[in-house]
Length: 81
Image: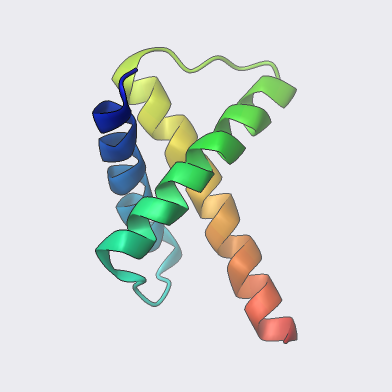
């Protein structure tokens, strides 16, 4: 996947994760960063449990799951601090 496609998937995944977790909005740039990091986390988690993400929809689902996990972790750390 090219860089622009990866960034678009990351942006959408970050936005979706923000809507699902009901987190305080990080804004457009924050959603992009959360989505891109979430894509790496989601790919790792999916690989660890033996799942494969195919195509744009699979990549979006994987990135969204990773972004949700990232936001939950950030919320947990924020409460402890």
